[in-house]
Length: 210
Image (cartoon, rainbow, N blue to C red):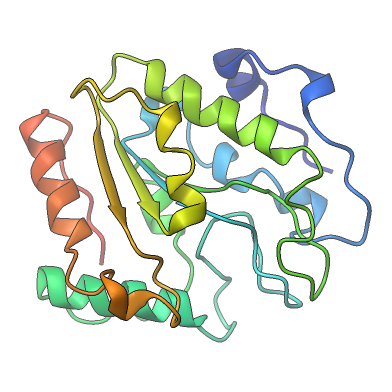
């Protein structure tokens, strides 16, 4: 079973008491629950993309927001994210549904709830994960290191107050990439080119989103 990573615990000041006890069964399985945090250290984070809760179907959630393992059917939100990526950067459509390649470049793919009950979206939203993930977001935002925070949809945008509006970070807000909202302003928002331009200006390099 995976445990809350010590380096993130120290960075955020969270304690064992802050981490909720989750009723099983839940997705993702315990060994994948903290994969977003295990993929990179706090000082490696260049971009935070904030999701809501994991996918709730069998075999879909693997610890990275908006991502599913290879071989799993591409979720509609990820399909729309890729459509905007193609439109924004003029690159071929990515084929992989696994966003590990983004995480390896410093993109923290963080859901505000790290678990969900099978076939029950938002079922773990009130179990205590908010205390954990808000603490992580706040700690990253309080750092002097410039970062991009991507808030897609109203749920993510509710965390806007955790990020100081002092010009230290870039905050990108738009509707959610789900089929219900993507045509209300997500399509055409060009987040990927905006992220790379800003990161380059800060001397933090670019993300290869392909």
